[in-house]
Image 1 (cartoon, rainbow, N blue to C red):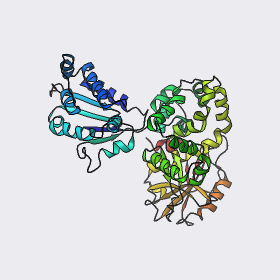
Image 2: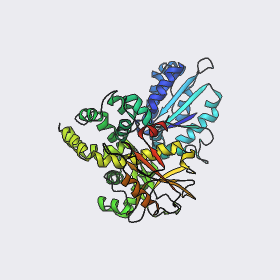
Image 3: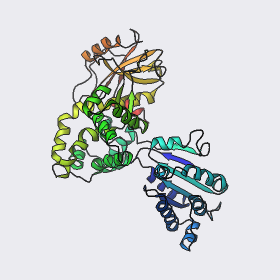
Length: 443
């Protein structure tokens, strides 16, 4: 029995469909839809009847079940070693929300039926908190599941799919993230301008509708969480800035932030250095595509639907440089952390960022040896993601000055530069990373 989780639209259901097709196994694929318990049970039996599993013949002939335990046992009837059955329950969190006993029912089905039969049970869900809880000690399915996580495509794969240079692939990733449906919509050989001109002038494009559908499923009635998320998407990162932008009471903001962090939609960050700073927090949108959507697409949905998508395109063109400079930072940090440990990065095993309480000092990259704070700072770094200009000598000099403000850093701490467009020959840096280096970390 497998638990398969991942972000919405990342391709979990499609992956399972392709797996089933590849094995040639008989299968039952049921997707919950948040209906009442009795209605969902009836839909499950309908899914069995429509399937090619042996039990499909029985249900079509009139066999039925009044409880989920009986229905699950019925579904795998007739499975043999020569013809095993794959039973898929998609959107499991919808079932557990409607019926709190569903986990216990699945436990009984496993203990009494499934584990003795040639059956593969796959439980799929997008709600991270619910799916992670399935495997926790003390829960009914503890020690009965193998957990698999489907992650978005990495920037290198996206670049290969789209036929883009390393720099352009990272720019594309800052727009569509790693969602296969968006990469397929983009299409191979097209530029960012080509894609946005088409996608932002089509109200039905996946770029426009995917995020809204995901948020509607994640937070169907939580307007405060949506409001807080919109504030963070508009670059209100600090707690005080979020309070100001939303106008909500602190208790409401704190509850909404907790829900957003628990679901993995937002990340809570603290400065990374040799000194703990747990009270200095920033909140950022975790997913690159959602980050782009909240800044440019969501606020322009009304004009896109009125056939004036060119206004949204103009907004991107005007503010793209500033947005991209921020959006690339977590993508770069992830790539560097994947490359660790390497001798050239010293003792670093983890990468974060540093800022002081007043944000008068902001360092894009800080590499250290331990979490949540470093015992030793191996490097500090700066990202310059400019369209035409290189990482300049003055940028390196500023980074050397900022190094002294990072707790734990000293004159021996390495200086790292990351540039989209090369480096001045006389920029005083110990390490230089190009877009090609960043993509190589994912391969």
